[in-house]
Image: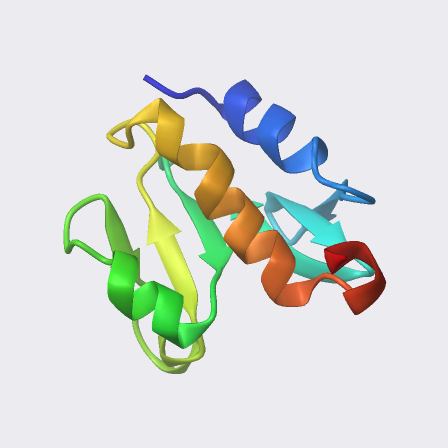
Amino acid sequence: MLSREDIRHTALALPEAFETPHFHMASFRVNGKIFCTLHDPEPRIMLKLNPEDQHNLCDGEVIQPVPGAWGKRGATFVYFEMLESHRLPSLMRLAWANVAPRRLLR
């Protein structure tokens, strides 16, 4: 089972990623843009995926679109306690790559 520290470690391992507060939760950013938020006390993160990736990955249980307009733009909830741990790095990288500057994507 993944923990909050696993989320932090995975997010901060990405190039130029940093953590900063966002309202009542932790956010992980690159180039000032959020790619992940860590909710508390719920065991979930929000990943900023592109809508096509979101559509392909959502399963209705562990990975779900955020309700409303944010979800239509790719904001996606991931219930990390139910997520298979080997999936986290690739999901996190997709979200990071969605907002990272081009120079980091090379």
